[in-house]
Amino acid sequence: MPAHYFADNRLSAGWTKRGAPSLPTLALLALLALLACAPALAAPLPAVVDQVLQRHPDIRSSQALLDTTEAQIRQTRSDFYPTFGLNYRQSDARDSQSGIGIDRNTQRSNAVLRWNLFNGLTDSNRLRSAGFNRDAAVADLDDAHERIALEVTEAYAELVRLRQRMELSDALIQEIESLRESVKKRVEAGRVSPADLDQIQSDLIRIRYQQSQLRGQLGGSEYRFRQLTGQPAANLSSPWLEAPENARGLAQLQELLESENPRLRAGLQRVAARDAEVSAARGLYWPSLDLELNRRLYANISPAAVSDTERSSQISLNLEIPLGGKNFARVDETVERRKAAQAALDSLQIKLSSDLGALHQELAQARSIQPELIERVETTSRVYHAYRLQFDAGKRSLLDVATTQNERFSALGDVIDNRNLQLVDQARLLGMVGKLRQALANGYRDSPLAAPKSEHMVEAGPSHPIAEAAPFRTNQTATARAPRQVRQ
Image (cartoon, rainbow, N blue to C red; front, side):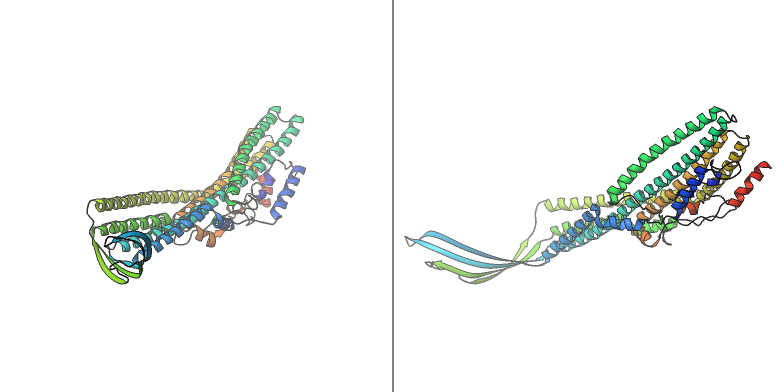
């Protein structure tokens, strides 16, 4: 994120008593202007998500499981067709015929066609079960897409947040260093106590320690991003998602959750598959009726027996009635499996519905507090500016200036964290109702809000959402009037 969105440079310690910028401040302004004019070579979030979805192992695994269910359907469907077989037998034997030993060679070949005509609709119900399992696998594939898209979105958003925080920390250190130089000159001139210089040095060490921790988090986030996406963590844009019109209210989200959530859809299909398995198991109670056609194709017996069949055709109907308790136990097993599947579905529905409500409330609170957070940034910037002028005039202590300075940057950090929370909660809600990929395709943009206007702010550029949510640079005219307001 361009660092010029973070700080009111005219309020920094680099401004001299007469209002002209010092040399360090001029160098900083030049750097910030260069960052602001640099071309945005951003890697948008939707493009990163698409690339990850094309090669993620979870997607390949879900696709393979879907292909497995397709193969199972083909296997089950083949049970409706007859089976055809050919057999050939050749034997050499020492027979005794009328008390005379004979070496006899026998060659026979048969063709057999078997067809099950009725088995209690077991095959039909197995085919229904396989179809429901395939639909569940389709839902699982959709869930994998949504889950991976959410994982990439969270990693992307966290990386952007940490980089914004790091730039904010850099800006704070620059302001403190500039303030230290100003205090050092006053100590040398005998205008303030040397203890003020120690105090500001202590604050600088504290901020650098916090920055070192932040840098460690940023390094870990960049490594995780590279592992997840296979791409360098560079040229990232600032993402924002707009929910579809039918996925904004809590009632709308609850309705979509029940109909569109991939995990619930998969659970419903698996319950239906267990129902079909129960019907298939109960079909084993019925007798099985099979048709068999057996035809002798060839027979050669040398020397010939007294009599033998060279060619024949045979039709038989076999009626088998199962006895014992095996089939009863199988039905009991499928019934219990169906109960377990239904219980798992009910539990998942309760959990998802609770999580959805909690996320929706959290998002609503984050959105409602955002204007006040932006107002806090403006207020703390004005207070800090006034305290700096009063400090120059000897009416405020360095502690007052440092406190308001920390408060100002804390307010800026809260705006960053609040925006990231909104983005992540919105992505999670959309993922729960199966609409995250749709939002990435149709509702993605780089900035969440239009810049609020006030006499203390200038027009902020649209290239970053923090600039639009809270443009932190102060209007030059208002800044020029500030000294007179303080003197009054």
